Length: 133
Image (cartoon, rainbow, N blue to C red):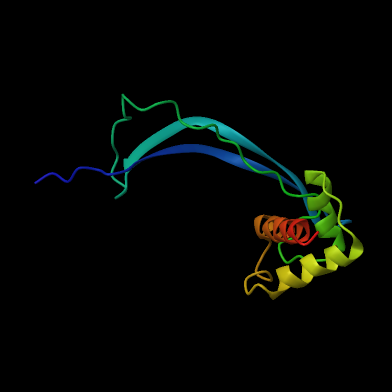
């Protein structure tokens, strides 16, 4: 009995070069270098042939660290200001404190770094303020 694969994985071998600034204690950049080796496997880890009818794979876009990246970041107004600047928003100091209070109240905010959740809280505060005016 042959089990048909539901998912086929494309595994591209390469490496990452990461840059750290010891003076600031922050990661400042990274470069993703894609190698020539590509392997294909099913969801069970068995080698398979590349699918002949698949559309081109999505680009290997990798996310650069924020300028204030730190694995165990102490969240402060500067972090909110980075999100502000990147999105063309303007928060008052009171809104920044509200964002930080909301963000820090979420149970997983202190585990590692999660810019996506900080962004979501910023949007939440923007929407709240838009509907209350």
